[in-house]
Every structure is written in C-alpha cells, then in structure tokens.
Image (cartoon, rainbow, N blue to C red; front, side, top):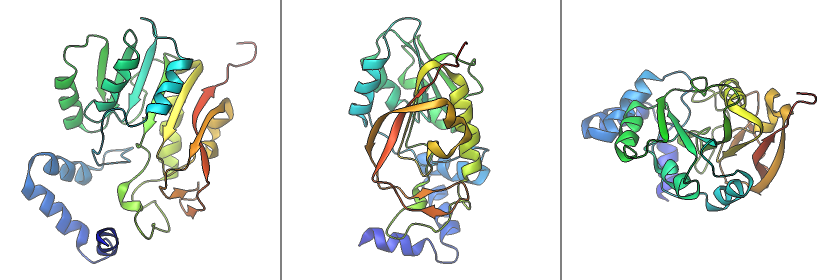
Length: 243
C-alpha cells in the first residue's frame, strides 16, 4: 500500500520540488542527493545510494572462478557508491588492483575514508570509464547503476527519457567495454536497459544468465518494453581475430 501511494504521489504537481526541499532541510546525505539532482551531471543514472556488502554473491563467485587473483589483475567497480562493493570484492580478490568510479563526490569521499588502508584501491569521481587506460581491466562491475529508482513501482513509467536515456547508457557501456582486456568480463545487473541492444555488444558473448530482477526495461527508443524472464548478466569480451 505504501508503494502505491508513493507511486501516485510522483505524478502530483510540485511533488518533486517538495521532495527536494525536504531533502535539503534534512541535511547530510539527503542534502547531498538534492544537490546531485539539481546539478544533474552528465551520465547520471541511479542517484540513490542504496547499497550493502556482498549483494551479489553468485555473480561475484562466478567472476572469481573466471578471473585469477594476482597482483597484475585489475577490477573496476563502476558506481561504487561508498565502497561497499569494493569491500566485498576485496574479500574474494586479495591481491588484485581495484578501481572504484562514482559520479557523486560525497560517495567517493566516504569510500576513501573506508578504504584508506588499502594501497591497491584507486577511486575516481567520473561518469564513465575514460579515466582508466584502455584494455586494462579483467572484470568490470556495473550493478544497480544503469537504472533510476523513480521509474519503477506499481505502475512503471511509459518512457524513461525524462530521467535517463538509452543513448547515454550506450555511451557509458562503450567506455566500460573499452576499459576491458580481450577476454575480460562485463557484469551488468539491475538495469533499466539491455546491454544486448547496444552496438558494442557485438564484441561480447553472454556467459551467465540470471532471472530478471523486476526493474522495468526500456528500449533504444526509451519506451517501456516487455521484461524478459531471464537476462544475461555477465558478458565476455571476444578477442579480435588475428589481434
């Protein structure tokens, strides 16, 4: 019932302005969120910070089985929030270098405090992976990043481009693909878009499927489309023949 009321309220005139004022008055994390939404930096998708450690144990275990844990391995946590995902990855990859990228400066500041004792972690404020060298990562995680919490609910929005756009999603996942070494793994989970509908997906093969997470799915035209029952969540970058 509470979810229905919240969904209906989103369509009331002035709802979003009042919500922003409420967050601003609360200060702290809520005020940071209000500032982020006011700035609307390029390539902002999920503005909310909801995250916990080890949210994707099966996915993490699959990647750990595929990727060696050694000093020259590199992982990217894209949309790392306050570092919870990096903490989970470190438990599985004790030797690898880990990069974290988040578009929210406050998130990165908190992640730096949490991970200050780990010299093999580097954190960046950015909206894509262009801050990393090309073909440098063995695995990239973009989990609950390419979505917006206000699109879901009892009645999903008919189109998404008032909040996020497929074209921006395609640009960012292309930068993630560029950061991967041949044979590297791209992990995308809880997204409002399908990686398979991007042009860059032609250079990848799906290697792990999981049940759809329930988030609404939008096509390249930014219109709501039927959600599949199963979705690929891990993709391997196919080495270029003769490369």
